[in-house]
Amino acid sequence: MAKKVVATLRDGSKDGRAYTKVIKMIRSPKTGAYIFDEKMVPNEAVQDFFKK
Image (cartoon, rainbow, N blue to C red; front, side, top):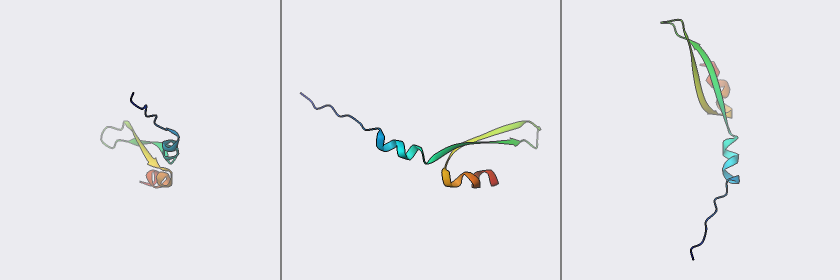
């Protein structure tokens, strides 16, 4: 019989907490409509994302 391999998800969950989903609303200069810029960035780069 073959051995059953069980993946542990606990180790990967720590990496997921290091990222934050950020959403920035940008107004298009061409049409005047709003565009939403969504990204997954590391927690340290959140302030840099909003400064741009």
